[in-house]
Image (cartoon, rainbow, N blue to C red; front, top):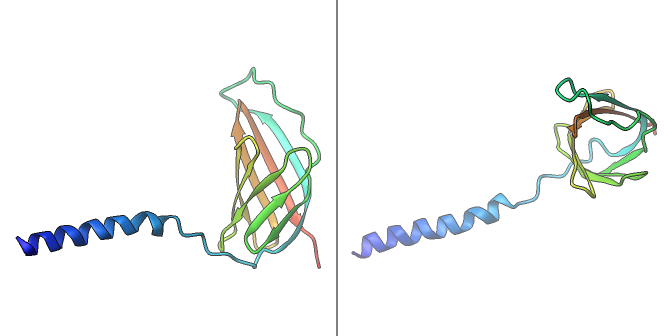
Length: 128
């Protein structure tokens, strides 16, 4: 009976440790640190929602990356993270999510698809 109790206790302690490991912060990176100028925000209707009311395309606020943390200000404040591989995730105060990628030339291309509209964002890293 003692051996069985020891095994069950080991399993229980291992399972209890899993949530802590799962909540560990993502590794930070400074490889993409800098200010990125807003190049374009293009909005189009999704082919599946031809009657959607989409906002106009237009200007895009700059964004700043520091130690893997992304902050954009402007009409809507966006915050997020960038991975060591350049994968970008942004969210605004309404919890809308924008997914993107930073290429080797310092261009960020990101997209949001929701409410029947597709919005494509482009930022370019400013030279130092």
